[in-house]
Length: 187
Image 1 (cartoon, rainbow, N blue to C red):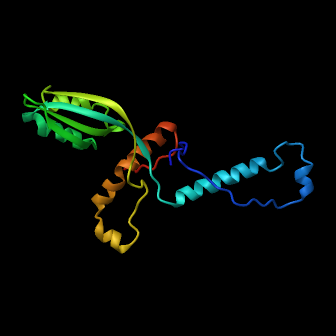
Image 2 (image 1 turned 90 degrees about the vertical axis):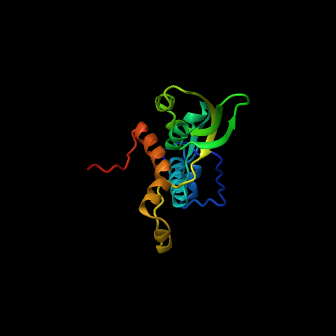
Image 3 (image 1 turned 180 degrees about the vertical axis):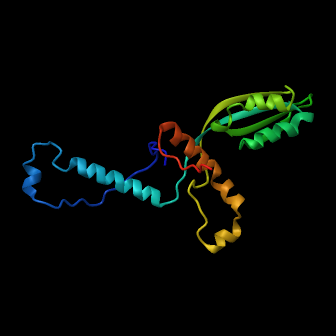
């Protein structure tokens, strides 16, 4: 999808059959045999097509986000976090104060400019700390399209765009950065 290395994948080759003369293989001056480049290329393309035939998932970097704000600015802080695909993990009131602490998971891609937007929306009444928290799988297939009548009835167009939007956006950003082709509609 993004020409990135795969992780946690194992391929088991159960049988290999060479078609051709045995003399060609044994008398070759190449230590790997005359077809080594052909075999590697064929296995690479076969593996790529096998992975693209099934459901595809991407993994994205995630920050642990701690936001501290007063109770009167809580709604504005939630608004900014929701616009940036943050997942709220915990919310608690700091003892003896009116300060709320919101713990969330925030995709790194969505974090750029977030602290400034939080301060702007809350008139500076917020503190935010971002720490790398690891990687999470994006649960949607970036190429998903409804194919049956049931899927078309269950999902309207906005659901389709939202369901694959985050995965597609992430994939397109990486592909664009690497100079790979990206599907864009130019109006």
